[in-house]
Structures are given as structure tokens and as C-alpha cells.
Amino acid sequence: MTNDVADTCKHGRTALVIGHPGHELRVHHWLECARPVTFVLTDGSGHSDHSRIDSTTQVLAHAGARRGAIYGALTDRALYQAILRGDHTIFAQLAQDLAAALQRERATCVVGDAAEGVNPGHDVCRLLINAALALIARTGGRRVANMEFPVEGPPGECPPEDRAQAVFLDLDDAAYARKLAAARAYPELAAELERVFDIHDAQAFRVECIRPVRYGLDIATQFAHPCVYERYGETRVAAGIYRDVVRFRDVAQVAAGLAELTRESRSRLTATGRA
Image (cartoon, rainbow, N blue to C red; front, top):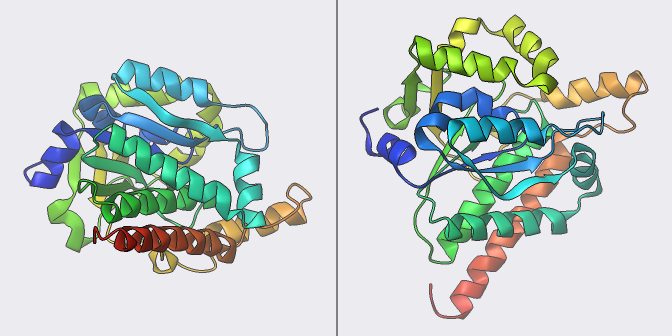
């Protein structure tokens, strides 16, 4: 890591913001190095109603990181229902709460889920991060480096144009062993770990890539359509497991509500003569 962004993301006042508990394992060695204050949007209960937030608390403690003010704020069911209802109030409040917490922490670098079109919770988490940082910028707060990591894609995936400003960690044998041990000691993710290792070679996780975010609240071009969660949701509805399919248009409505929030923030700032 030789660039200024990399230095900030390792040695600055860092924050990790993830949609579900367990995502921290993707950047486990960075977690050990940066020891970020960590915000988790949901409790990871899925449709089982069994929270996995305590397992993430253990991972953070072993890595020397700590929990933030938003930590398992919603059940997965509550999150998806809010998306389907178009409940802009709850997302606006979360964005404002996250912005306020990041300012209190004096964060200089925020790392979080990438928008990949695989899970609506991941994408909404990214929208909340981008909205929170826009609120900070538009109210005269400090500039914060905005970074992401792939939650579903290959661990080392990075567009060529982003490589100069990306953070790459190549794990030695000891760091890699600790990462695997942390994942295998996370009981709620046993099936997920098997699925992931079916998709990616286990050795791929010797690399952690944290790359710059160059998009805002319009995430439509970040992945192919129809997105994965629409196709998956259709199969679950057909099987009688889900009642409704979360569509990209539902997530886009969350983005639209957050965009309105940031515009209102800008308007208030202008009205007070600070812009």
C-alpha cells in the first residue's frame, strides 16, 4: 500500500459499514490492521429470525475493532419490508444517524459493501453510506474517503482505473490462517462458507481489495439487469417461501428518497448562507 488513500484506510480513523453481520470476514486482515468502528445495518436473521450479530461481535473483539452506534438496527424481515413499502422515513433516519455517528467518530475513511445487485440489503447499505457521506460534505464536514469491497464478487476484483487508489492486502500464512479460523468459528455462516468456496477458490481469499467508490445514489449501472436478487426472489416466491419479490425499482425508490434528503440538506445549507 503506497498511495495516500491506502495510508488513510489503514492508519486513519476508519469505519466499516456493512449490511449484514459476517461481511467483516471478507476484509478480516484489514479489520485487524485498521481496527475500525463498525456499523451493521441488520442482525443477519434472514428468514430464520435467529440473529447472528453476537458472532460478529466476537470477530470484532478478536480483531481489536469495536461496534458503532448502528449495530443490528433492523431484522432482515424489517429491512425488506421497508424496501417493499417504500418507507423513505426509516432510510432517511438511518442515513442521518450514520452521518452523525461518522462525524462524532471523526472518521477519515469509510469502507463498506459494494453495490453488486446480488442482495438488496447490501445495495441499500451502500446507498446509506453514500447518502451519509453526501450529508457530511453538504453540511461542511470533513472530507471522508469512500471505499468498498466486493461481498459476492472475487475478493481481488478491481477495475483497472481504480487500482492506483485501491488498497490491496496480500495475506501471509498467519493472517490467512486467522481469517479462515474466524470464518469457520462463525456457526451461522457454515452453509454460506460452503457456498462461497464452491464459487471461489479458497486461496483467492488471501487477497483483500478495498477500492474507491466513484458513484453516488444512482447504482443502476453497477451491475447487470435483471439483477440476481430479482431472479432469486422469483424462485422463492414460486416455492412459496417468499410472498413478494424485491425488485430493483424498489431499491431505486430508496435511492430516490435518499437523494431528496441530500437535496434538502443542500437547500437548508444554502438558506443559512453557508454555501
